[in-house]
Image (cartoon, rainbow, N blue to C red):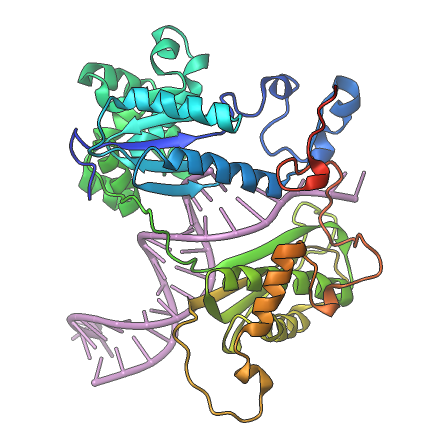
Length: 414
DNA sequence: TCTGGGGTCCTAGGACCC
DNA sequence: TCTGGGGTCCTAGGACCC
C-alpha cells in the first residue's frame, strides 16, 4: 500500500481548537503548559478560569468523534486521542467536499470543531492539517482557500511552492525544536528550502528519520497507514505528587497504585511482562532542595500480568532505591519485555500458588472495576482511611463527566 | 507551596563472540 | 613504528510525537 501517486490520498483530521490555547488566555500572556502557580493570580485579577484535566470525558468524546470519522473510509488509523488518518484511495467524489462533510457531521453529533488536511502522504496530510488550523489567522486568500479543510494534493506546483516557502520547517511532523534549530542554523528556514536539500547529505548530517520526512514531503510515501495497531511495547504509569512525599510508606502507596494501573493496562492488551522498571525522583525545579533520582529494572519471577506478582517486583525495587531525607516529587512504574499471554513457558508445580493462577482472579478484579468504577477492588496497601493522600494528584477544578456519569448529566432548565 | 503523562524509533557505543 | 576484522546483542540516551 502506498500513497505515492496522485490518485491515492491520505487524510488527517484533528480536533484541537482552531485557535490553540484560547485567544483570551493568550491575550493575558498565558503560555502553553504554563505551571498554575505562575498564573493563578490572573484568576482574581483578570477572571482566568482554570480547569483540571478530565480524562474520562476526553476519552468518551474521542470515541464518539473517531467512530463517526471512521464511517468515511474503510481504513482508519487512530493516531491519538484527537487525531486520525483515513485512506481515501479509490473512494468516489471530491476529497475536499468529503472533508467538509466530515467536519459538519462531527460538529453536529459531537459538538467539536475539527480540521481536515489532505495529502498524498501522511506527512503531507499532517502539514495540510496544520495549514487548515492556522489559515484563518493568515492574511489574504490563505484563509478563504485553506481554513478548516486543506487539500495540498490539488494545488498547482507554483501554488504549492508558495505554501512551502511560507511555512517554517518547525511546523513539519517529525521536526521538533532541536532539529528545527539545527536546520535554522544551517540556513534552512522554510519547508521549500528543506525539500530541496540533497538526501544523502541530509541523512549523513541528521538521520534516516529526517530523510524519510523529506521524502514524504516530496510525495513519496514512506509511512504506512497502521489501521491494526500492535500491542504496546512498554506500559507506564507515573505522576507528580500533589505535595512533597518523604516517607517510604507513602511512596509504597503510590507505587502500589501505579503498579495496579499498569497491570490493568497490560491485561487489557492480553499481555505478560518480563521486566518492571521503578523510579522515584525529587523535583528538579526545586533547586534549593537536595536532589535524588534513582531507578531500577527488575525481572519478574515469570512473565506475568498478575498484580500481586508485579507488586512483589515493584516494591522490592522501591525498597532498594529509596533513600530517606529527600522530598520526593514523582514516582512511576514501567512494564517492559512485553509479550502476548498466548506464549507461556510451562512450569513444574512446586507448590507456588501464583504459578497455578489461571488469570481468573485478575479477570474478576478487572470486571468488577469496569462495572463499578476504577478502584473498587485494589491492593490493600494502596488503601487508606484518609481519602486524599498527599501523593495523589490534585483534581480541585475537574469538570463534570457529562457523558459518562449519570450524576453529572447536564440539567436543562425549564 | 506549586511545574503533564504517556508513547515511539533511532543511534552510538560497549560487551562479547570467533 | 606497526597491535585484526568481522559479527551480534544490549543499553542508554536523544530525538520526536500527542
